[in-house]
Length: 286
Image (cartoon, rainbow, N blue to C red; front, top):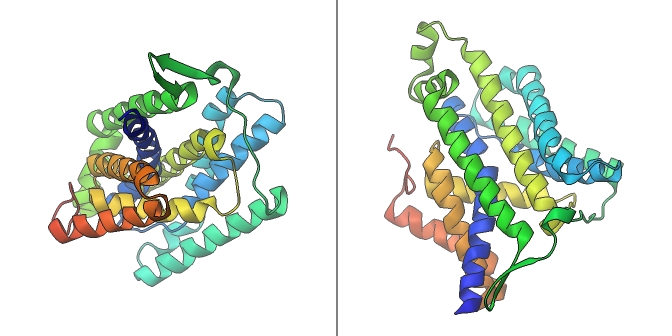
């Protein structure tokens, strides 16, 4: 039972990272009706910029603060200069432009850092384990669970208690109504896209000491983010949280019960949810 308890807690930690990764994708879709296939590239940049910051002698805590801001600024520029031009076009254009952007970022990463992965050291403060009797768990993974939980509450507070959050929630229902109220919709779009890029990069920074940084991690992250969003419901903040936890726990438990099928089971879980609730666990109909 201690093994399953350990794997459940592991699943919660992984699930919270999946939530951070997926929440930006979900919010961007809810507001813009824009499916961003470049979302995994921001996660990839987060991990590699964390690695580079530590190569330059900066510590992990500086990277945790600076990298999401830098990637968020890049996301803001990408939305303003490139993606905004295709909002009104067919979804095929959205796919082509964002997939092209993701591939460009991946190739830039390979050019600068090489095709092989790089490890990222756990910060000194969080090395070692915490012991409760016979139960032993890494300090860093506990930090990830606590930090992402606090961040989830802060994000919820932004979406529920600020003017930007009100505009995002209203815009997810009707962007025309928001425009008529005198709000600059394109400015809201840019801020939301930057927030989505920053949260994906933050997930990359947090994941880097666990799994390192390698050039193809963005593709894997994108597929998982889509699974989380589909399970939770497109455009739903709560859905991204629930979906991330479901997938994290399923994947972690299955790595003990049936290791070869751990990755497969997340897609089976998605199929099961879609059969029972086609709009996701917390998604809206229509």
